[in-house]
Image: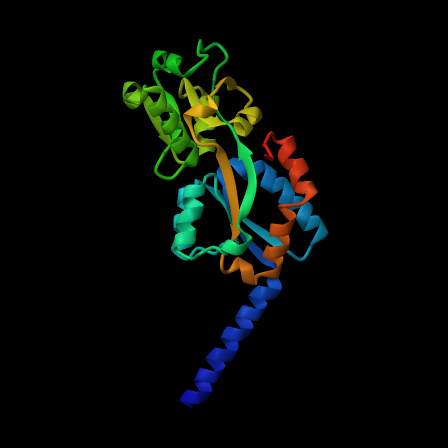
Amino acid sequence: MKKISRLIVITLSLLLIAAQAMAGDVNLSIAASLKDVINELSDGFAKENPGVKLLKNYGASGALAKQIENGAPADIFISANLTWMDYLKDKRLVETSGLGTFTFNTLVFAGAADKKVSGMQDLAKLDKIAIGSPKSVPAGEYAMEALKKSGIDKQLEKKLVMAKDVRECLMYAERGEVDGAFVYRTDALLAKQAKILFVVPQELYQRVVYPMALTMAGAKNRDAEAFFRYLQSEDAKDSLGKYGFALK
């Protein structure tokens, strides 16, 4: 009886795995700043592949990497910096052979148009500045690097308002809850109230790069592989350009 019960359990498990494979689900763990362009690309891909369901999880790159480490379903991971991709590489949780660069971005400071701020040294005039939590949000990490290299990090210590991701930073600026926020250029271009007050000089921080990779599970998922290839297509490049991302 025990052997029969074990066979039943094994058979049911195999059937469940097969059903999941047939379902055509692809789990995406994507940096929050890519939300709009990935939504557009996933819609385009779904039209051409109606049997595939793209399940999107947007957030801070560090939070997403930790979720993947803890077993959250993920087939494709796109980070907003190399740090968190390297973190998963070291844990052997991503397929390194296909690892590539999805796109690039620029860090800016955005706020109300009436704010008299035109550069890093003007930030001392402000009372509240939104920044992504540097421990998990790449935009915050880039911003802290820029503050330190500008020599104003200690000066602004008590003025910083931490956000869970770059989109929350932008929301604070849009609502006027802060005087300004460090966000990506692509986020600022979507803002309705906040405006780009200045572009953070590139020499103050490492270039914003978005590495992408299939996870170990994604490498075994044909639909995930197909979408991963689609992210490198001309359609993808057109969408990235439309939203203000850089390709080189």
